[in-house]
Image (cartoon, rainbow, N blue to C red; front, side):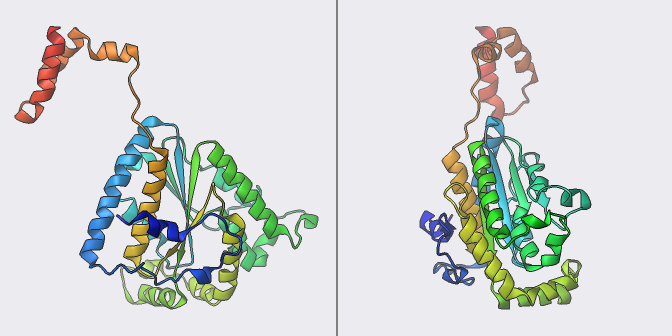
Amino acid sequence: MLPSDIIKRYRVSDGRGFTLAEIDPTDRCGLDIEKAEAKTLLAEGAKRLASLQERLYAEHRWAILIILQALDAAGKDSVIKHVMSGVNPQGCDVHPFKAPSQIELDHDFLWRAAVVLPRRGHIGIFNRSYYEEVLVVRVHKELLERQSLPLKLVTNTIWQQRFEDINAFELHLARNGIVPIKFFLHVSKQEQQKRLLERIDDPAKQWKFNAADVGESKLWDQYMQAYDDMIRGTATEDAPWYVVPADHKWFTRLVVAEAIVEQLEKIDPKFPTLDAAALRDLEDADCNAILVEQVPGGPEWDAVRDRLSRAAGS
């Protein structure tokens, strides 16, 4: 996997003074490797992630909330597909945040995220998130009008207020064992245009094409300003942003995988230990005698068979 100093390079835990101009979307930290080698590195990361997730699920104390924000065609879906390839689906939930329903509009802007937060032991993935409320809603003012807020609350400070609300929400999550890991996949305008055109030319990708995406790409500068402000306003020690170069998909996936593994290793979940009663059951002679009869044949089961036989004879 990638060295920790590479991950640190893209972590923003204090947004004051940050600008996206600091991060080159084409950056690979000097890595020049073949596609096959990148796949091998990612497979190793996915294996580590799967092992940590198994312990997270078994311990049932912490939860992980992965937030993926990006412009269209930056690679959010492929990150989910490739980085999470080894994870047990039983302990992982993905929630895409599309245009809000009327019921969601009738609640506060954090409500629809709060009701799908990951349970203890689970990894939750938000494909887009409540951050759309300070991005697309900010760029398209008419979307704010649909939320039917009291007019006196819609002031020039509403975006700063939402940053403060989000910071308080994420601090609440962190204090309750839900660890936010936030990624902005930073793709260049040229690479985005290339990928949008590929969706038209490739029959396997045409289903992804949306004419509205072309219109959104014309608002590039407004979105860049909104993302700048968002990261400056919501990057904290408890919930830092990872601003990941996204022009090279293999590199993006490696950075995201390593950042998730790094956070899980900090948590260091453990498999639960058996209490005294469970240990007595495990050592019960009658129980072990029954289990011996159920052990399959073959040399790979010899150690299990011998242990159960010893316990049954004690």
